[in-house]
Length: 529
Image 1 (cartoon, one colour):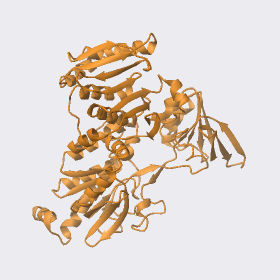
Image 2: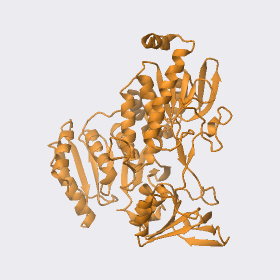
Image 3: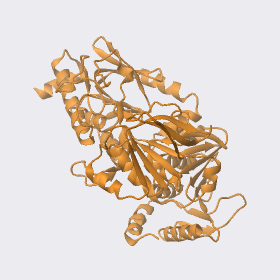
Image 4: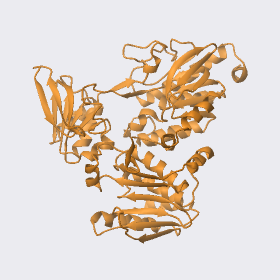
């Protein structure tokens, strides 16, 4: 099942394993079980530390397999075939169960080990979902550290009946002890915060005690990462505060236009951004949302939703953008119940069903093309009288037999039965006539909104809510700069955001060496002189 080049690479990784790993498979006579047997047989042959046995037990999903090691109480199971994006989750789990140390701060490891109670996690995934591996890998790691935590990845395509019965229409879908725990991308820190009620208060207290920065970057996407690197290279005290490092890039399937990188995926690009920033002396504050920006004497204060506040002599705002909502009745009620914003993640859950894509730009038409290979039928609804996507995408769309396009269509309502989407209503803008569509999913692809609501009243914003900046990235508040998709800079592209982030950091440094200064920035001025 695995080709020779992959086997060679894996053998090099598995050389780091320090203790035996038991792979206990629960298989039946089905085709999926045979596929899984072939995969596990290939893997078991790559290290003398691996022992593969087949043992079915009552109540265990099949096909599935558990990973454990003698002398350790580990409850970690994969149900289905962890290929696609979950193949990395499998490899990491084998390494961690085999004793390879996790890449976590010592205090985080201790927090995981200190969790009391019984935690049985079940995570439903699709193999094309980019967000799912973050959850699976975080929970797997926690299970290797705390025997009270049991985890199971469940591949939705293999266990379709369960997905249907639980009405799961968006992944990752996480259940704890049989109850819904959360949906969407989560890392170890986010999961811990939900399990440990006092974690946020302890973290806020630590953040309040931090000394002021010379440059504080708000946002961890391409613009924020570039700003942090350029600031840190100047030898000044640099911090980054972000809700999730990587930002919108994490929701991007393919990146093929970043100069010198011919092809990558969003999750890989985001991981590379974070790794590059960590190469420098940058204080990264993750899982924190900025809530208010205040001029505080010679400093700028960034107040966080957690109640903490960080201070800095200069600030670079790189808060990016988010998917635009339709703002129609039913949209919020049926979010994750048929209304979704990620065709790559959730498309497989609508196999054989009828869906709609709202939006005729590049993202909408790309979504329709991808979905057409999975679902029974796609209807594209575009508000304008023509599609706005690139012609190459439109040609591909027109070649697909199971796609219809409706132009001049204003979506007015998402319809459901109380638990899931059953259709939508739209108005023909030319005739004013209302129409109904019966369908199971609505994929919203109508552009972006800047993440600047928290800045209203503090900075000058454009009518579209973008931060107004000059050629140096300066905003209307002294010492505050901005870059990326949250600003008035045209063309929202990763490469442009990265360049603007670098420029904003250089402008912030220039501001520091020209302002009344002391401490670290004074040393930087001497170097510049």
